[in-house]
Length: 624
Image (cartoon, rainbow, N blue to C red; front, side):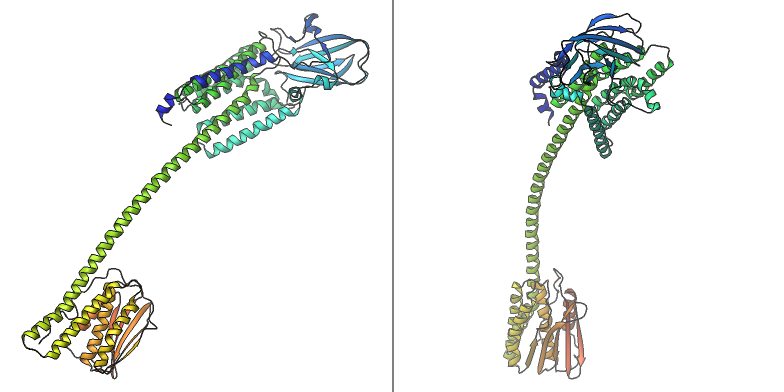
């Protein structure tokens, strides 16, 4: 995304939607109220005594007043009349109750437990109890409820009480969810799996500050949930009253998370405060020098301030980057702070209320973070796809450019090879054909023998044919060149009365044949035949092809003439040896009884661009 694109993106619509969403969620608990059923007997009056205070009549729901000791109990006496004893089974339903509750009806204890192991008694819970048959009677009935606070400053709370058949009391699925003992255990399991998932991702991305803070916050909140579980080992149970002081650390962690999400460097004091502030509050609380409210209220205030500061950071990032996910993530930050203020007011007795709601907003924070991370993942994948498309396009352009350069280079190389072959052939024509022509001219000027002139002219013609035949040869066309050489050689030897024995069946395939390479092979054979005729005289010439040692091919030229080549000043043998070396092979002359044999050994793959010999076979002028 370009900065100009972000700057041009309007903020009015997403900002308005986020503000409306925040306002609705913030006001929702105040409009919903407690989940009272629409039927059954409703009890809304009670006689209450709290601690040492005398009995007084109150209306339900009722919340304790302020300035009570930490350990205190309140006794509610509810009297009601029934015209007749109910025929069907009845249940007792209390939509909201806060602190530990003991219930008795007409002198019979219905429940004295401390709620489920997952319930947090000081934050509010729902109570539904079956009433034993025959316990309710016609006439006067008395219900006694005792709320007991063992620790903390959160006041007790008792909502209206309902009696009736369970099907009439609990009609809404929301009621069933609140009453289910499994809901908190399922929430804890999901919380645990979220932490495990965050640990896994952080292990793969240890340098990512967002996942690092998510892991820290997840572990800290999970520890607070575990600390509320009952029963607990004594060591953890002793530490539970201090867990509320860790709220300050959670708020500062959320601020650090907001800074990490916004890619803003965190201040140096933040890490020290995350550890130092709760430690100082715990030490002050453990000293017993100050009331509990002096430590718990500042802890909650710091937690609220951390969420507010984090929300402001996210709103600023939303304004600068104009990405809606940052504004969406700010919503649970502000909601947590808002409900935190409400919970503090409820805990101090300044505002009536049943459930403490700030902890219920925390799953919304994780859900919003999950949405943001999924959005970031999708954005990263989109950017990756765009980058791949750009890379594929650039790669295609580079491949096209390289193909064009390769084609051009191939054309230039072909031109260079053709030019080199042309120069080699011109040199060969100069060294071979020009020598014959010079000899013919010299003999003509001196009135030489017509037979010599004719013989020299034929040699020049054969030499020209040899060059022309080699022009159209391909990579493996050496047998074709040899066949053409045989067609020219056989009539000549027949006129001279010489028998030719030819066999190339065993010659292996030779690669890398170029016009120059083929011409060099043919010239070696031509020179070998010329030597056999000149120094023989031979009556039989035998030319055979076969396989040699070490992946070599061998062409032998044998004759039954003189076994030894007389010494002379000619360059025939040296020229053959030089040509063979340039082809990667060698020539050897073997003397045997009744004649001689020349062996031409060639590799199975001739070298590319073998330089052509400077001197031809007949480079020196013939004597007249």
